Length: 269
Ligand SMILES: [Fe+2]
Image (tube, rainbow, N blue to C red; front, side, top):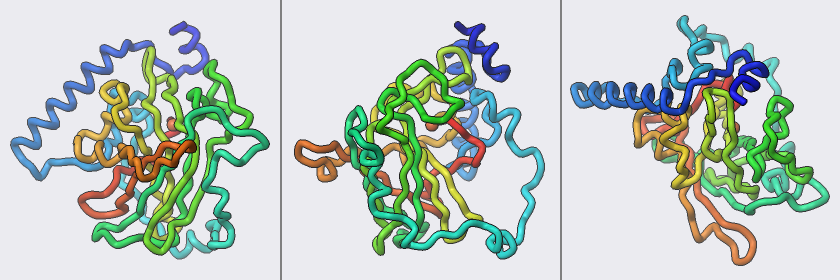
């Protein structure tokens, strides 16, 4: 099975989970010791070059970022207005003729800046696997069923108080080819555009208590536990509806020291 995987994807590795665990532990230990010696070394953002996350080795930037002129870029970038996003687009369970399979959930939250001020009119896009852990994406070929009633994409605009809400299906964990028997914790991808189109930010929301957290090189790529915790939604019974859905809250901080962890745009897991 491992050889099959390697043949399908030349980047796939056959390292066992134990190898990944040992690398994660080593980096974590070095990080903790470094912060103990010098608290200013605390990190809130993911490492771009994090060896247990194999493809980050090939992809991480090795040169300084180029600064571009945002005004020029925005002349050519797509633009959207409030009327372009329909309220129903935030409900991922009504996009087809039938009901998708799985646990219906609502995810509600607020987008704020570093001073806690609500960010209104913010476009939020989400994408996710279905209740069997399968994406519609053609690169996802693992043997779990596609749900014909679930595309796994939605979008919403934040209200005046920075709030948003999605209705969707709880995604399942899924395998990926980072190493042998590698599984991602269940997650929903979030994209936000900040205050203009050149500030696109992408992150992932996780579910509380996921047993895959200690094993996942993407989650572990954030070395600071407080920063990791900000990516985990909270079960919220006030968002749960009688005989209809369970509910979670997930607030997003765009700037400042409590900023929500954001990843580069090349991740596809
Ligand atoms: Fe994913």
